Image 1 (tube, helix red, strand yellow):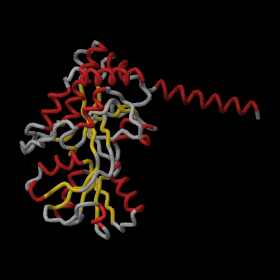
Image 2: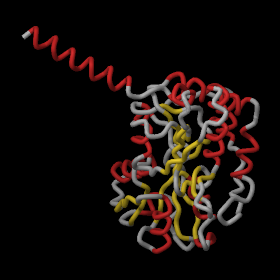
Image 3: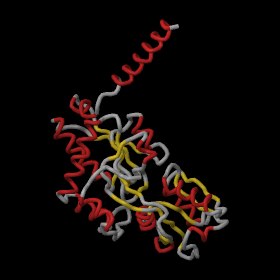
Length: 296
């Protein structure tokens, strides 16, 4: 039995070594001529989305391109290509966890549950979940949805917050899951859902870029507090150290400010309309001492 036990340990050990050896660190791979793979979203306006040319653009995408420059400098790989990979709210975490992408540049919330699987760098935005409704709707708070229909995007923290509020407050809300943000907005527009709960900054961006933005409005108190950050592997400390250092430099040097202004204060594609969202006091305070530490 002891002999079989040692044999089993040996097999397990070899498997662990094999899995570890099969995935080189990002910096080593890039130094050897590999590409940096950046995951992006389809409709997370203004963080990460496809423009009229079907190219990945946005606030988080621009930040990731800055981080890519830091990787080039660190590795000496001046010609390092950046490959873009589109992900959804449902598969974004697995994409990073499985090593299919090196950075997820979207609108992902850093929370304790996700940190069990992946790592996050310093938050680039802080928001909270509110509701998007039709302009003629009388819904002003989640309690007004009693017995009505609410939609949120699959795999997001606002969806979980809505489900929790529904249980705790006995609201009898029918909660639907949309595959992406654009579909959720469409469901509100067509009357399939009475409200769409999501990070308010995303709701403003999505509404501003619809054919009739005046037909929608954002309402309600915050259901959550969402620190949004670029996601990366928790098993590559050397890469994370570089990414954290560069994010901290961008914030402290204020190089991040014109990038923020470009996406939140100026006209953005595809409809060339501004969101007019200045940096919040909460984000200003967080950036005074930039850290990847999030207390929840």
